[in-house]
Structure formats: C-alpha cells, structure tokens
Length: 471
Figure 1 (cartoon, one colour):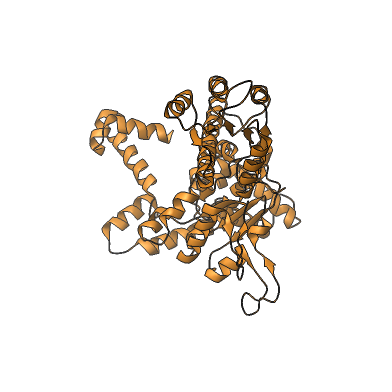
Figure 2 (cartoon, helix red, strand yellow):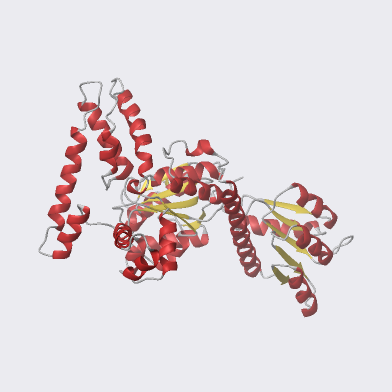
C-alpha cells in the first residue's frame, strides 16, 4: 500500500453497518487517504483511544448500545484534541446544535455529498495537524530536548538558533504539508530538507532536484515524466521525479527561479495531489511530500509579480529560515575542525593544527558563501599547507579580496555609501545597522535606556524588546 499524502496518525470510522464502513473507506482511499481503521461497535471506541493516537474520528449518530451523542460527550471530555465529524440521517436543527455544542467539528446529514464529506475531512485533518504541531512545540520549548539527536549529526553546530530549528523540524516532520526553506547560498538548506525526510518516517526516497534554469517543458518532463511519443525524441515512457519520490519526499531547490507557467503546475499538484505526465490523458496521484528551498527574497519576488501569492501561501504551511554563518559565529571552531579532518583525509595529509588567531580572523568575516565557503577555504589552505601548522595567508587573501570587491561596489560618489563602508567595511545588513545604532545610543547615554530610546525615536519598551531579542 502506498503511503498516504495525509496523516501519519489514523482516521477512525465508526458505524454499526459494515457496508457503510466499506463505502466510506473506499472514498477516502480514492482521495489518497489510506491510514484508516474502522469500528463497528461504538463501545470499542474509548478503549481504542486509550491505546492509540488518532488524527480524526468520523462516526454515525444513531448506533446501538452507546449512542453517537453519548460517545461524543465521552470523547470530548477525555480526548478533546481529536476532531469528530458526525454523520446522521437526522436532519434536525436541535440535534445538530447539541452536537456542535458538545464539541463536534462538523455535522453532515445523509445522504452524504461526497465533495462536502471530503472537504470536511481535509479541513479537520489540517486542524488536527496544527494542534499536534503546537503541542509538540510546547513540549520541546519546555524540555529543550531533541528526541532524535542522531538525525541532525550531519549538521555541525552548537548554535541555539540551529537547535531551535531542529526542535521545530521534529514537531513538523510527520506533517503532510509542504515546507518552505529559506536561507543564503551555502547555509545548509538541503541538509535541513534531508533531516525533515529522515524524521518523517516516510518509506519512499528523498529525491532532490535543482530547478534553476529549467524551462516549462523541462520542468514538466523532469517532475511529471512523459509517455512514449509525447514529443520529438520521447522514444520511451519515462517516470518523473514525483513518481520516484512516491511515499517519500521531493525536494525542489531554487524554487524562486520557477517560471509562471511552472508555478501554476506546481500549485495544482499541491492542491489536488494529481499530475499529468507529458502526453498523458489520465492523471496520476502523487503522495510525495513537497519540500522547497530558495535563497531569494520571496516577498520581494511577489511584490514584483514574479512569484504567485497563492503558491507562496501553499508552500509556506511550514517555513524554516536557516541563519547565515555570520549569525552563528560560535559554530566556526566546530566547523573548522570538522573541515580540517575532512580535508586532511581527502588529501591524504596529517591534520594540521592552527593558530588561535585564525578563529578571530574568521569571526570578523561575513561569509557570503556561508558554510560551503568556509569548507572551500579550509580545503584550499590544507592543500597549500607544507608544515604542521596551518598558514593563515590563504584565509587573509580571500578576506582581502572580498573586502576589495565590496569597496569597489560601494565606493561611489554617494556619501552615505562611503560612510557605511567606512563603518562596516562593506554594505551592511538591516540587522547590523540596527544593532550598531542601538549600541551607539546606549554608549552616548551611558547605558540609560530611557535616553537611548529617545535618541532612537522609539519607546523604552520597544528598545527592551530589541535588546532581549539580541540576547
């Protein structure tokens, strides 16, 4: 059985008529929802809930032994986090109101409209997933612990920001919703995507593709595949990456480069979980989870109408921003030692030691290429190394060249550019300017926060928030 595109926790169907259970199970499976269990006796439900976590309960109202309304009372009292959809042949307003007051998520009258039924199921599952995510996040924040430390072993870090990301990843890993990963080039976005897949419990493959530079046909062919004869040169039927990632995770890197036509096709895939291979008339169902990444500012792309808002809000059901290396300088010693081990092994050399000044030097650099750039710098230095101590010369040269580039770019006739360059040595980020202004205001006011806030033109409470955020 293929893994569902929907929840890891099962849906429970409760009805005393086996034929109805079979019918509604088939309807859910045809919609790609396969994790289903059934109960033909309402008395079985509460013992089952005591043993098993569920995402949703769909039950009949009129049943022997324990009525649906009585069962609803018990579920709402003991397991209020589980949404319950009531199905009934009783089209009675008073009964409907009583069910909703008792905690029912929805009340559907038989004969059931299938579109209404599936729509209600999907909404309830989304609510259930969000509740579980919030609960998981609360647990992680309270304990500060990770349940699966080993999954993140490939990400070398001791940063509190990164550890907070890991906790969030553990909370959302089992969700079927898409994930949008943002961050600068070389920050480790694909490693984050792999960790999401590894934690998800999905049995299928992690399939990654960089979609930058793909035109619409190449995008469609790469993802959806094609039938034989779909276009000139299509001599054999070929499965796309979505089929290869069946039951697993499809990772699309550089999503910000996608053309408008391809964006529409991806949006349809996310909405309907269906796609058409090129040349095919019959749609195929997808159960791959979609994880995307970009180093572009998606908000800016939307303002320029280069990225669809409806696609963005579909993709950002869960969003992760990977901080750049300059915002986690505590990781530099760890990464330096790790890359020295790698480089020495790769080049069949003895691992060199390094002067303490190297850490200080690297901590002053803003690393536009992030972790990947540091890795390249270390490999280059080890390749050049001729003694037991690593030379700092190649690091100094790279930093000097980068500073020269920034001076060339920003040494225009614009006085403000020259001023910023003289203070920061390059064009600063908004956060760096904010931190600098706050630091200067506190210095000028002898650390009197009231005076500093006045100098900055903000309230003391606003200044306190910024200072606490920076800690």
